[in-house]
Structures are given as C-alpha cells and as structure tokens.
Length: 74
View (cartoon, rainbow, N blue to C red):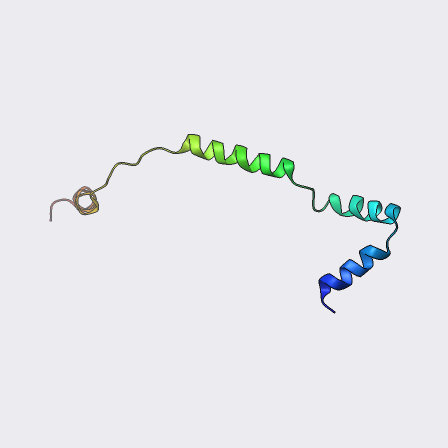
C-alpha cells in the first residue's frame, strides 16, 4: 500500500470534527494559499517596476579603460 493510500485510509476513518481539528492544526504550518498567490503577484509587479534597460556594453573597451585608469598607459 502506498503512502497516499495509507493517508487516504486514515482520513476516511476520521470524524468530521477530527478532520476539522487536523486542518486547523496544519493550516498554521501550511496556510491555504490565496494570500500567498496575491503576495507573489505583488512581488512580481514590484520587480517589473524595478526593471530597466541596460545599454549594450563593449567589454573590451571597458576593460581597456579600466586598465589604463588602474595601471596607466601600457
């Protein structure tokens, strides 16, 4: 018998009141998620607001300028 089948059997044996108690106990640890989805959506919107275009960078030119600045003309 699989773990899911064992769990299903246990749940079938519980009375309605026992099942409500079980849900109440575990809902604090694993809250049911509409609020969680809304939080994720707001967080994603905040990330979208922070997003901006980054100009193309010429790495070789940047490195050459840094070397010149750091070590002087070579």
